[in-house]
Amino acid sequence: MIQKTTFAKVKTFEFNPLGVNSYVLSDESKECVVIDASAFYADERELLLNYILDHDFVVRHLLNTHLHFDHLFGINFLASHFDLKLACHRADEFLLEDINRQLQMFGLPYTNTSFKPEIGHYLNEGDIITYGNQSLKVMHVPGHSPGSIVFYNEAAGSLFGGDVLFHSGIGRTDLPGGDFDELVKNIQSKLFTLPDETIVYSGHGPTTTIGFEKKYNPFVGMDR
Image (cartoon, rainbow, N blue to C red; front, side):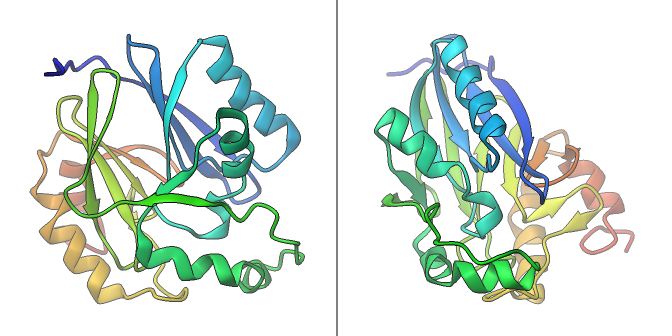
């Protein structure tokens, strides 16, 4: 049986014109996972790859919290280099057929969608992802998108929440498949049951904690 440890390193990169946070999670085993590989520009892809190679990491999983285009840009680059495929929730797969429409909504030029990733397997509520001496629990938290998931490392007290919960904010719900009431309900019933000291690493912007958002978040907090 794997002996769990609370030693878990988080490296944060902010990539692409929409400022997406990409995360490389590692520990003393030299194994790692990459969450939301969103490197768009050539220098961003080089920076991400060199960080992994310079630390002699073995990439075990490529994970995505959801499949909006801005979180996809660097996946194929890493998938090809490390011979991996993406793991995500099935409910967001429809978004991959609509990338150009997403780009148009943000005023970005059409593309040949060469960054559309190949999905290796689907993740569901309660799944456990392991790497090194760490484990991440998958929680399905739809509302921002139908397939939005978060990754919870209980031992390390950290949550990788994508665009579900931000510092003093929540994910937008006016995109295809979004649902404000569903998002609020899921944050309150699932994420707010975690310990207050849990650090939330969001898809955009700075980190926060569950306790801070429970008290002060104007959309879902107790004082709203």
